[in-house]
Every structure is written in structure tokens, then in C-alpha cells.
Length: 402
Image 1: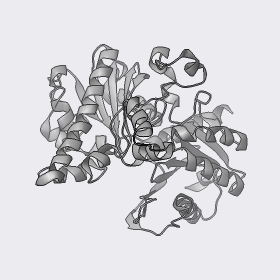
Image 2 (image 1 turned 30 degrees about the vertical axis):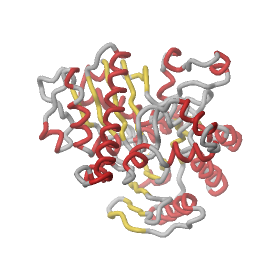
Image 3 (image 1 turned 45 degrees about the vertical axis):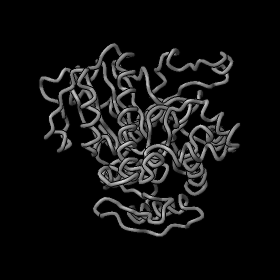
Image 4 (image 1 turned 90 degrees about the vertical axis):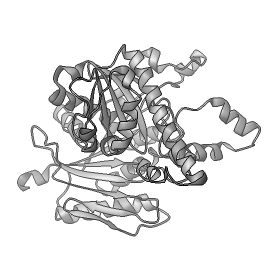
């Protein structure tokens, strides 16, 4: 890597059960979409954590069962140190899910900012806590590296107030209770690349479906967010792998008043025991559940119901966002399920015939960039997301103006 080795951006992208990492050359202009080197620790909290990096297939590892995320970070640090032969990293950029009502732009962090961001942990308990722990550790371990936070909520800062405000007493808005929206780094990346593939269509009425273990939709006009399905927390909107998505608040009142569940018990149900896993009783992964649709007895019935509800919730929200947009020109699938699960895309598109969607079965089966036919009134596309690149890109821009 030559001299650029002295001026690297390390991106750390934290999921609820994974940490992705990627190295970019901070001096490269334009910044290549493909990192110099990258990898991932996945299944961190399970009994079979795995590690992979550029050039190697995933393999099983052993992590400290009491502090698995910290152990995963230490493993990443060790691998990076070996890869760089101990050369220092100039910038460490972190994906932070929630910036609250104060933080929108990428920023250099310090201990006081980390303390403020900790107050937002209850709004994203699966995602917010450990990145802040990692930041604190790295501030101590690598004090010469500039640490940057990039916020998942930032892209939705363009939402009009009518989309942000909840129908609660107005004082709730004044206290910061509002729709923030999430998956913003993914949507931000998609907004960058859509014009390259779709030209002027990218600036028209667009819905992006970020479908992974967490899932949401974003309605864009002129490549800006104007509506999204996630709200105050990462629980709202679509049915997800283990999260409920939007739910009548009366259900929570009932669980507390009548079934006497505690707040912690309800939180655990909504974040860890609901969604595809909760309804199917089989898995949080659609590609696993679909294998059981034809099973006899209750297991097959629950598998069919879980997938039907998952598709229904997506289709319903696409319809709602289409109404907000005043029509739809481009529908984009991204993230793990959106990019790789052809049967999910097919089932969604079959329910959107009323919009004039016509899709190409062969193109869809091959995960090609455009899966609609030329005669489709709505273009349907598959676009891989790249959160690591957009984080590195923002870090490079921030360093250029600082």
C-alpha cells in the first residue's frame, strides 16, 4: 500500500450480532468503493461465532462468553495490527445508530460526546451501547487516531415536520419525541449510486427497501428522505427478524396491566422474540422459514403465516409511501434479504401489480441490477448497499474541511 499505509481510515460498522470492518486509503480521491481490506465477525452472541476477512472463507472462532463484543473487537484489532505490521491508523470511523435531536453531521468525538450519546441507548438498545463502549476503549488505546461518528439517523434530517411529529401532546415534540428514522447510512449510499445506474429516474419518486434482520423503507424525492417507516426507535414500521415492527400501543398497556409483565420483559419480547422468529417459531431468516412452508401440521402453517405477514407489512407500507410520494417511479431492494432473497422480492412485486409493476422472473432469480421488464410502469432494481464506504467517504470529507 506504500505511503498511504500511514493515512488509513478504519471503518467499524456494528450490528446487533456482528462487527464489519474495512480499511480505506484516506488520500485516495475519489475514494474507491472497494476497501483495501475488510472482514467481519458475525454471530457474536451465539454459540458459533465466525470470522472472515479478504481472501478467506468464514471460519469458527471462540469469543469470551461474558463479553463477546469486546472480544470480537479485540480480535479485529489484532488482525488489523498484523495486516499493517503495527503501522498506526489515522482515522477510526464508527457507525452510530442514533444521533438524537442534536447530532446529524459526521463529527469527531470525545469522551463528553460519547457520554451524551449514551443517553440514547434506550432508543436503540440492540445497536447503540457497544459502539460507544468501543469508542471509549479506542480513545484510550489509540489516542493519536481521530475518531469519527457517522449517524444512521442523519439522512432523515430532511423529513418534513409533519412526518417527524407524533400525535401526542405538543410538549412531547419539544422534549425530542419524534420520528428519527434509521438505516440512514445505507439510504445515503443508495442515494449516491442511483444516478449512476438510473440517471434522472433517481431524482424522481423512489422507495428504497432496506431489508435485513432489521428492516425499513425510505421514500425519497430528489434523493432526499421525505418519509420512512422506522420512527422514534428501531422497533417501528416493518416486521423484522426478531423485532415486532409497528404495534398498537394498547398491546403494551395490556401486557403490563393484565399480564403483569415488566418493562424489561416487554422490551425483550419486542426486540428479541417477535417478528419472523416469533410468528414462525423456526427462525428469523426468511430463507430458512421458506423451507418449512410445506411442512405438515402447525409448523408449516406458522411458516406460511410468518412469511405472509412479513410480505403484507412491506406491501402495505410501500402503498402508504407511494401515496405520500404521489406515485412511484423506482423501487429499490437493498441489504441482506433485499439483495439476495429472490422469493421475497417476487412475492412483494406480485402484490404490486396494481402499481403497474411487471417483473422479470429470470432477472430476479439472478439478482440482476434491474428485475422489472421494460414495459413495467415502475422500475424495480436491486442495489447492494455499502455502509462502510459511505462512512469512509464522510470521514474523508470531514477531514478535508477540518
